[in-house]
Image 1 (cartoon, helix red, strand yellow):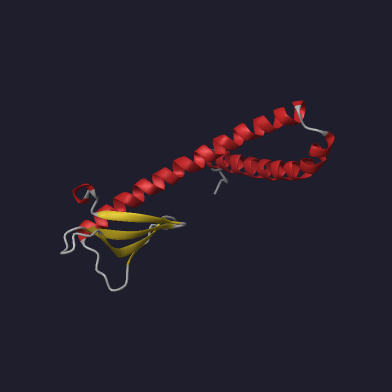
Image 2 (cartoon, helix red, strand yellow; image 1 turned 135 degrees about the vertical axis):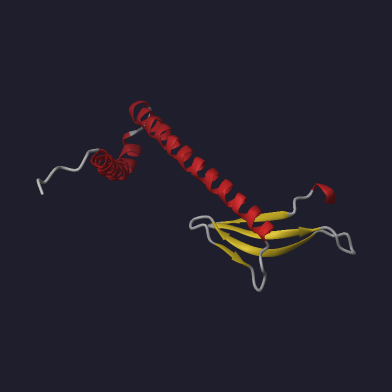
Length: 141
């Protein structure tokens, strides 16, 4: 098993990961994991753990993991949004075909407020994108 282990292990945390160097070359033939760094996925910051000095090889592996993790999280984000569209469609079908008056009373106001908020943000963002795409007006100066 030891020969199949990676040289690094990334323990996922809420905003990134703790990075460990995996060591199987020791006298007891045990797997040892030595924490070497913390990675913040949101801002890309890599901090050496304690008094450690990260090697160029460490940095290459960590930066590669960071780029892959950020790409994975971005794919998950857009997938979640596509699921939300599906849920909205399923909710409309539920309202039309199955919901009781009591159930509708329970969910109508929160749904309407959430949809109004979402619509407001989507319309504003679309307007901003459209304005960016138009050439600036000539002021004659």
